[in-house]
Length: 344
Image (cartoon, rainbow, N blue to C red):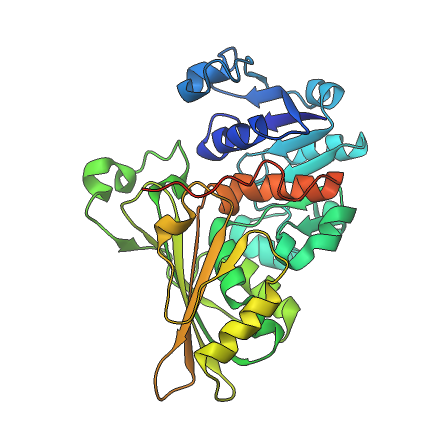
């Protein structure tokens, strides 16, 4: 099967290339860009020299549709929507990394992103988190890949939300992300090495747009929720560590909760529930499509603390896209994604 990528120059784009180059069922036949048109991919990403030497072409949906069965759009919100529509009308399967189709509510989208560019396409879009929507992902032609922060937070809280074990008016999510989460073209002062190094900073507390994804997906599992979310930029290249806080409705032990998590994720190839007494560190998932989850309960209270870690560029982006592609195309779900995390 032939694959095309729009937005190949960014961190998510190059990780998508790396994963697809190791996939047994597909080959990359089209790469589209803007500022890098005419350059070989291996010039933009020298680590791919000899593996992917395709020239970057001007973004052209007709050329991509003609040559590809599946199309990945790693572009800013609203930019790729006309091309996505054209690809869907041509019968192609589409994987979109922007926020345009993640939120089922037009009103929720407009609060954060402005006017929706294609509300008529929302009905066919599926939130591309296989752990929650595997069957729907298989059946759709438009997968809206989650944000990296919501992936870590939703997986951390989903078993508790589904069991209606927690109070929905007390859900706090604290996430810390590596700088690559900002993308390759952010030139704001905060991302310069002397500014970011040895510095941890919160941003957009309580108003970050990814909270809407958390509310939507956790609410679909049980009761409506409203998450208080604060992200932090931390001086590491990649990875997300999320600490989620919830208040249990009834007494429980860590062992009981971990048993519920183990059952919930029993058939999930990329979610690892830690043993009692162990919490994951960000490095655990480095370079992989895996999510590690551990938890504890504050002694003498019903306050549960859940820690999850993912690689923001893999499980939080490119790997999620490949996982959804595998489901939609009938491949082995783990194809191209079985590499172990990198250490150190």
